[in-house]
Length: 136
Image (tube, rainbow, N blue to C red; front, top):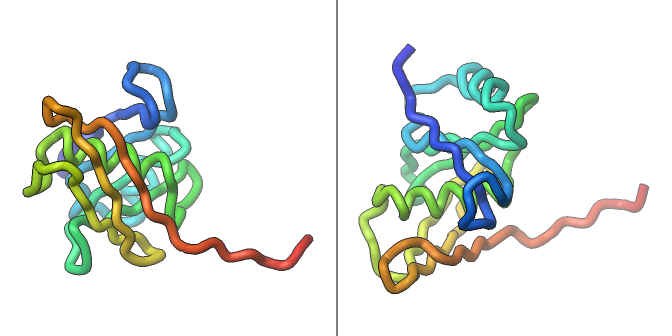
């Protein structure tokens, strides 16, 4: 199997080993669903993000828990967006950096605001309107 880079991040913090942990594979093209699931089982975090090329948005992102794929997740979205800016994997570096993410639920934007040194400092994530089901 080809080697893939896995970046371990902590969302919602600037301190190592604090916040909400997440694993991100920034170049996951070529992985099968089964391989993504096995990697998520190996990282054993609440979600592992897989960044893929997209024809509909800036990037396509898929999220897997150790047990299954999930259609959307908040903290790995923030972690992935911050990582894409930090690793200079996006063409724009002017604040705010707006990234359209393609998920299984559709395309939604994420905004990254940079500090005066050009490092990611703040993220704003757009979510779909909530759907309320019947009371159980």
